[in-house]
Figure 1: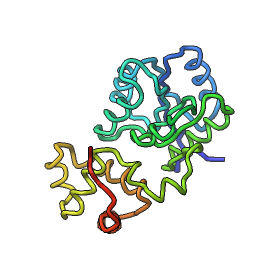
Figure 2: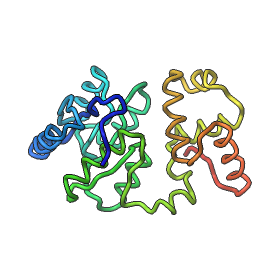
Figure 3: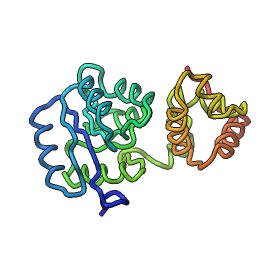
Figure 4: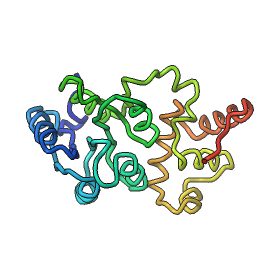
Length: 216
């Protein structure tokens, strides 16, 4: 079982769901687990953004169909914000939703029809820095991780290959240095690398293999 934060404090979470019954049930479940501290519960994407901008939280648990922006757009907006929470999508595992959530930049996915303990453990794992997508074939993802990158991450990877520093990347993309670090951290994790040098090596290796890095 995952534990509290390293410093012994509870993991801070914000819950967002358009179904008020689900939202109330989630709030009660997390309130009853000493590992977590519920900072806010909201029912719209706009309210979620407002909540996490006011108070820093580690994990946001969201409904993919959250009005009015929707989960995908909400995650994309958050990725541009320094200090944004890691996002766990709580939804139905029908269609390609887990993959869409991962591609948008979510850190985890938990099914609505799964056990409550699964949601709690996934949240704790996401807070610890893990990527948790139980319905995806990890071997397939690692064989072609370029499909996991967002448009911004693809563009950053190409810029890295040109030798740009973090400061230059921030200027190039019109974002803060902290946001650059946030994007690079996600990029490294998706490519299963731990450094800028390894990411660039991956880029050139894939280029030689004729893998397309178009941001389209």
